[in-house]
Image (cartoon, rainbow, N blue to C red; front, side, top):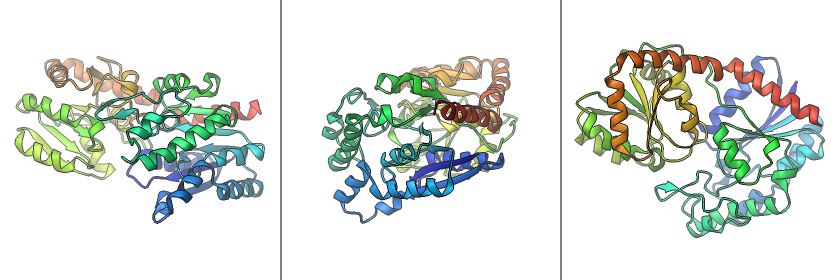
Length: 388
């Protein structure tokens, strides 16, 4: 099969860029011919704001280039990852006008929320949900803390809602979790066009031993990740089990200062993936205290892959990813006392923790391997082609 895959690079560690690269590698490993079409956010530097706004709504150059590429390469299907801001929805029309099925993976909530996260001022925010014109996002400068930038996103969303792009121009949407699927249905996307296919971990890092006797946090150090809740809990837990923190971000200096004052907490900074897998495999459990819905955190899937249970906030994607007392535990979002209680339960139930390690690995093998992901993706492609 010849497949066109398009992506607008963010140039940030992990996230959609990484998923795009892994998926392309997976398809090629199975013998498919992948036609890549990519743009890079680095091209935005120095661009006139009006020109950027115009391209975000409709990039006519992309439309022409993609039509030409499709005619030349003759792919059977077009699969889009991120089209924001430079590829733009014009790409969907290019594929549709050339008569091939159009698939979009929904990595975040951009089609429903200008900031793509449903998170504002330290809390969940759905003020723009269901709004033809998401004015609250502009008022609160949700995207990049800029009303101008948010207005550009709002103009793109409003234009394509008005002309029916999201409903009529795409054949299939891929949501990463059932929670996300329900949110997109609530936001107006047609339920019959949304399927669930999770991310996956490749290559398989292998089962760890869990002998490190420490808890682990891995992720971006930013407000929505629940770091304050995590650190508050470890003011009580530091003498019972050490915590290692891996990652960097806007809160790096604050986390470094806090760690210096809390016994039993160690900040390791950013680490390469091989070292992260080693730390995960030896950890007693992973803590995931995020306070926004998340898309589908690869960190949780990676933790399952090495057999490490996850204690996570009972919110959004985390609510369905973790089966309590089987692959981990839940705690109330933002509640450091409840997080403390769940950690203390784990520490007092070593037999159950050992069983959870086995079930976490089994969950990975059943749902999040490259082989299972490829099977699901081929099924999605085939149904999209059959429907045409």
